[in-house]
Length: 366
Image 1 (spheres, rainbow, N blue to C red):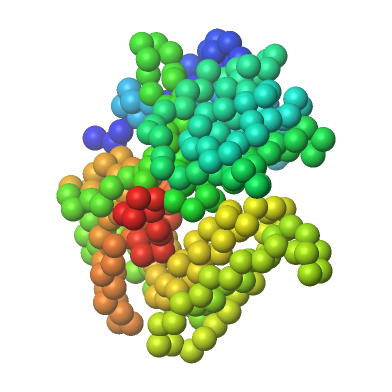
Image 2 (image 1 turned 180 degrees about the vertical axis):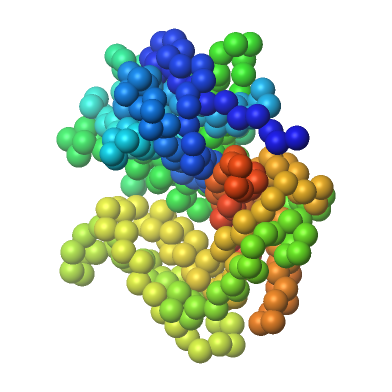
């Protein structure tokens, strides 16, 4: 039996339900690693005029429920009529800090930060933005502390109001710290109320999964995904350029020798003032660019090898692709996915974005 999906909306500030059964088709939704999840869908043409007040862009939660379980929740940012169609786009609560600024400086006096845990800074961002008038989305931040640090006595991590800092970019800085945390979004029922959570992970989110796998001819559907070999993206040497100009510009170089032809890449991080964070970004980029031969996206169906919803953001899963060109058997990390609930013409499926697990370096040496 096909799973039953339901879509409903609520006021952002109060949680008051606007529509318990929103008629949406062509739906695609899902979470991501270190980024807000996404939702797209189309309101039925004959009902578009009736539901405009129930999908008020910038002031409405939209939720996806599957068989009584909340799978996704986010804020509607666009509801655009296209002829007889009303196209709806939403993003998870992690999108909200990118629309907010620090108006007081140092997150209302919580900073500057010296050898601070990046997890603490992320929590402070959410505490600050939700304590401002009309800014409380009732989003909780959960997860462990980390052993990473941000800011030094010589170069504290500052959030100065005169630079009108975007709060979402502060969170991005924390995940870019070497050995820093990761995050994703979750939503679940708390009685009859949806509860949103920013889930922090350290030294990583997810786990290496030996109980599920994806393989062509089993649960990967359609044509075998291509294994991409792209030397345009490869490098063993990364030169990261930060803030400043001329001789005073910050620079960090991360390089290794691996017996292959030397390839270099310049990474522009023009706003980065701290040497430690710039070096961390150079190292992360260099590790990622040493990988060659990769499957980046698969389409899967519900199957006992990996039932729908059995995986989480950050999980490492064995991906096996076999065709006339390759025999690919590699641990790959789930960095985002979108569920397509299906229709009369197409069954339920998930489009999963993956990266080779050896692209990642985790805090704590994992």
